[in-house]
Image 1: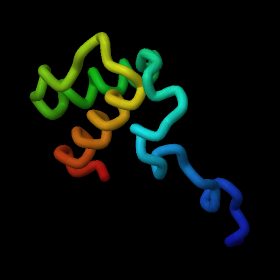
Image 2: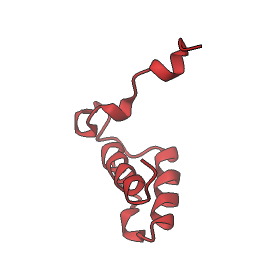
Image 3: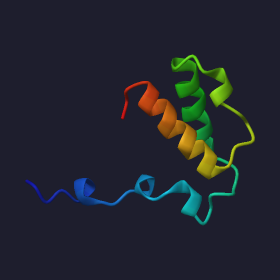
Image 4: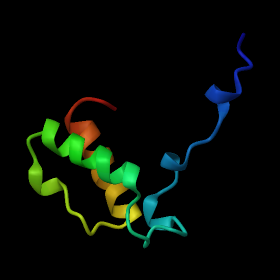
Length: 71
C-alpha cells in the first residue's frame, strides 16, 4: 500500500537547525547519546561536546552521518 503516512510525513531534519525555535536549548539526551556514538565510530572524539545546543548537535550529527556514509 502506498498510503503509508510514515513515509509521507515531513521531518524536522528538513528545517535548518539555525531556524529552530528551541535551537538554543541544550541538546537532548537522545542527541547526546547518538552524537557520542557517531563521534566514536568516526574516530572524531572532538566532535562530541557536553555543552552543545540542540541546533549545534543536530548539525554535528548530520556531518558525522555523512562522513560515515550513513546519509
